[in-house]
Amino acid sequence: MRKIFSLFVAALVCAGMFAATETTVYYTAPEATIGDYTVKLNVHYGCDSNVDPWEQFTMTKTEDNYNGDPVYSASFTDKWDGLCTMQFQLYNGDSHVSEVVAFNNVWTDVAAYNGKMYVHSTGKWVTLSGEEVLPTVVLHGTFAGSDWADTQEFTLADDKQTATLKLSLGKNIYYFGVKENGSWYANGNTYKRSGIKEGTGNMRLMADVEGEYTFTWTYETQSLSVEFPLPAPTEFTLTNGYYLVGNFNDWTPSAEYLFAATETEGEYKLERTCGADTLKVVYVESDLLEEWYGENNYGLPESLQTKEATFYFRPVSNADWTALDGHLHVEVKEATGIDATVDGAKAVKVLRDGMLLIEKGGKSYNVLGAIVR
Image (cartoon, rainbow, N blue to C red):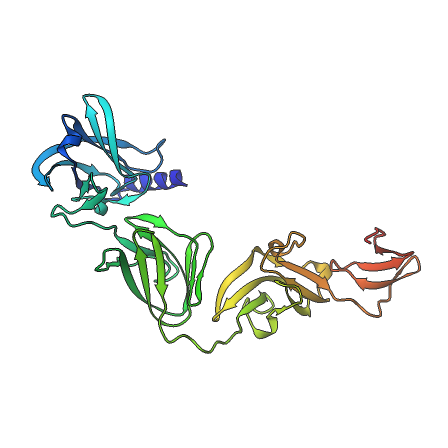
């Protein structure tokens, strides 16, 4: 994935879509640490060591000092407007002695270090006046529409431990991640009024009312919390639960397609007449379509169409079920008055695959003659 990202960035550079930035980086360390060594700045433009270029620059000792320690600087053209690795190295002639890593294999925007100073003793970035520099934070997601885009930056709190952002949003499901100095964070959490639901992939916000949502980023733990607007919604069109949707109801949940709980824990059922249906199951909460089940839509086989059937659903996939990646099982209801026999034996029910079940000699056969029980 990093290689694909690096090649993509490289292509943008070649196309002129990244404007190279003239950059100056400062570094301060105790005189005793540096001694007679040469200080060098070593940078990696991308995150793939096999593809992306490294560059090294000799740092010059300035006339300034920071808390009594000398300050070194190096200027260069930042070709990609960001780096993946930055190291401050000590050399004895041509021999590498040691290094301090400011950041490693993490995409970092040029604004995070350009004109800033890295302090050897604390491992933090500061301005030239000595004020600590914290990473810039934005949300990157669907808040402005279907296309992913950055929001405005978070505002640093007075405690300098957190940063906040307030967004006025309509009722919807929003998909997003956090960019800290250009680095991507997405823990897969779904943020709901009732709490956080853990998951994988991009983050989601279940915005259940129109209003102002407050996002808070904690720097130390790189974690996000969301405060929902009040008052909480009190009335909904749909009951929270699992719904069958498909071409038969325009893929829109409605009360008649709500699954009901069975006596088996974690199992739900719905009875209906089958048709030439293509379908899926969706979980609805606060009138929002929170989670879909099955990677692909399920088309009912022709043998089930027009039959009365019971649809069984489990949010946790069942290895013995095949429909919707193991979440759905369709069973044709037992028929009465079936006028069918095989070798004089009366058919007693219709199987879920549309074949007849025959009882004969204490055993059961399907209409093809195979023993099924």
